[in-house]
Amino acid sequence: MIITRCAPSNTGFFHIGTARTLYFNYLFARSQNGKLILRIDNTDVDRSEQKFTDLIYETISKLNIEFDLTFKQSERLDRYKEISESLISKDQAKRNEDNSISFIYNGDDIYQWEDFVGGNIKCSKQENLISREFIIIRNNGLPTYNFATVVDDIDYNISHIIRGTDHIPNTLKQIFLYKALTDSLPKFGHIGLLTKNGKKISKRDKEADFLLLLNEYKPEAILNYILKLGWNLPDPNIDQKLPLINKQKAIEVFMNGKMKSSPSNVDMNKLTWLNKKY
Ligand code: GLU
Image 1: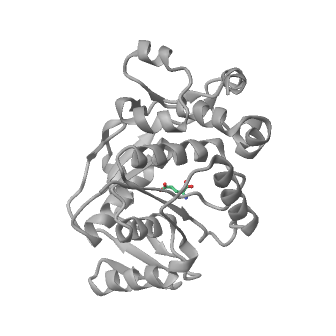
Image 2: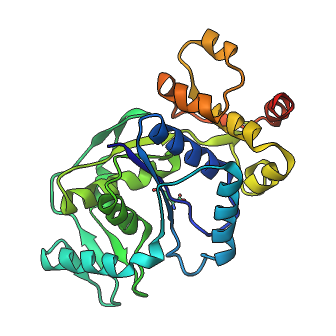
Image 3: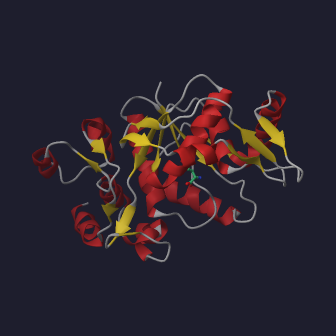
């Protein structure tokens, strides 16, 4: 069974990159009769805010994307504690003086993995070294991102993880945690970042604020637009014959195309053009 998830953090406005990740996870699951889970990553107490959680729900409802299950990480704090204690009892973690808990990986080094979007991804000796030991529970008792995400992805049987290439540096740590906690690994697929004029799109760019786009353009046009930010049909001629790919059509053709790991440039003229067509 294909199970994907989208895991936005409630630490800021809804980013266009999050919308694109959400849509790709949705299409990947729906086109293969799989399931899609929404998880709110809200354990960063310093930056998490309820108003950003509300914004996530509001944005998703405007896009008309349905999930099979929704949960928040803050509901699972006991579970993260339980798993961290079990790692301590197996000597795969240790409690530090300040009461935080560090994971300690004592298995074989891993120097590469197969990414189902980007192909073979290599890791250096240095990355292996720094990924073998890291904090999983902070001294305030809350889990770190890498730990909570792996515990959840295991518990919810996530089969495919589709997210931005900015998470590649986390993946080795996560693979080491998987090795300590279970026998199988999910498949990782890292999609290229969104850029504007060749530079990573920043929070200050107005194109990055997805709610602003939703106020100005039709949701169907926006979904069609973000689909083309990092996904293509293999044959450019078919692509030209299908300039409009609505959600239903996208579910039908998604697996005929390919997601890509190289960056995609955000171009509002294309969105304006699509908006007129819908
Ligand atoms: N909360 C993380 C983010 O928003 C999730 C990353 C992931 O998909 O593992 O980037």
